[in-house]
Amino acid sequence: MIAIKQVRSLIGRKQDHKDTLRALGISRLGQTVYHEESPSINGMVKKLEYMLEVTVVDAKDEE
Image (cartoon, rainbow, N blue to C red; front, side, top):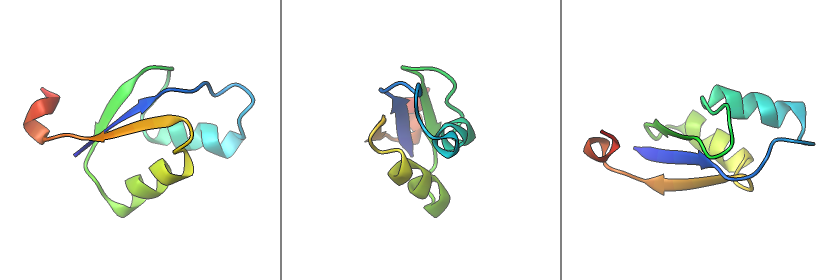
């Protein structure tokens, strides 16, 4: 499981980057979401790696 946190603003970004961030479930700066690692999630994270902070967590640490 990975924790994904937005650390940079969306202002002035491409629309597809904004859409990708929304698909990850992030709607505001500083928000953290948790996802299971999968090829689709990893691809979205790689696309936005310049504005995200990603850490690997155990599923039990999320609660």
